[in-house]
Length: 549
Ligand SMILES: O=P(O)(O)OC[C@H]1O[C@](O)(CO)[C@@H](O)[C@@H]1O
Image (cartoon, rainbow, N blue to C red):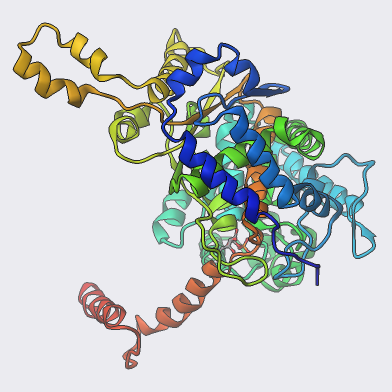
């Protein structure tokens, strides 16, 4: 078992609380006015990705204290442990090596004395070759038809990352259409199958554990559908493949060993898009673009592992997020991509962040008496401006946000992209600046005194609402790789400082156990021994479901 130690940060923690109390009334408007070099001092650029973190409630002193906090938590030490393959997922005694998945061929990383890089290369090449064969038409269906559609059946990390990246990189699409089925709600699979010709469809059953009931049920239903369309068991080999770390379980399920692409137990589901779990993305964009995606992530890894903490993009994003979360007690963090292709990014980041850092117990089993993982939420801009931005501007809560804005659009349609970007920048400025009572009064100068006194306070925007802006040259495979790796490392930075194990998810497991107990009870008459509410709801379902059938 890996040696762990409590974080030696009590003194710096107290200093940060004190610093928060003494700076909380500073307004960013004044900080910008006092320091014309604020942007210069508070941005980082890495290749095609610019992070502007100047619109935050921070001063240089705040950043210095936060860096000291990271040092006290031995962030560098934990980064080294992750990079070299130590078992930092202590509860499962596993290495955490998603960074190894994007290493160049010449590199080496050892897990239990075994260099895993050749294994990674081998499985990636197998998966890329399969994707290529599907796209160039050399992999035919059982009746000799060209494949036109690929359906990924998987959930959580076996769905969200590949789905988000496939949508984001749609401009790089090769020939086949790629669909995603995650929900066990039959509508998801049924509505997908409606569009498909079984003779021209390949299903990818994606499950690290190959034990996720939702995925296995959907996979079985897809297989039944396929067989009902006039195909034989012997045809399954041309139409069903799997991605799993449990190769034996996948073959037991009926997938030929040659059709199983291996992933590794040292990659967590939410960090697995870089592995063979990326197969649907490989099918969508092809080998060259997938390799660019990996190269972008590797560029971010190199920066993360080497840049000084004060100028390190993931470290800054992590520390500033933690500043609000822990010291301002801000409960949530919004992610707003101004890019239609990135519309599933908030969903991916929800799993990445909340499944990793949604913990109230430290690595040593101690109860943590401070807040940890934020509620991550968001929606594509500009749509969300016309929905929830009112609360960001004039609501009573502190809600930090990330604005993600590509400079170039893949769809240059008149002035539309310029309008999109203008909106993003205007929102960050308005959130920061706000509107004072004097400004509101001036705007209402045409009204009589009584009306003005009543309306002006309602037109005040307090401002001082923090945001980071991430400007990408364009949503290319390389830049998307950098962006996703940036957020992975942000989560790592925060988890390390809070002292949680970001790489297990026991909370999710508990719900799975209860669901397995309740599922048969919905269909039988067994006496129920849950709480009164759950008992009543099961009874209600039993009664009304029978009525409907
Ligand atoms: O890939 P699998 O093993 O089917 O798991 C799917 C998802 O389920 C979870 O274990 C949570 O339920 C995630 O962590 C994971 O990404």
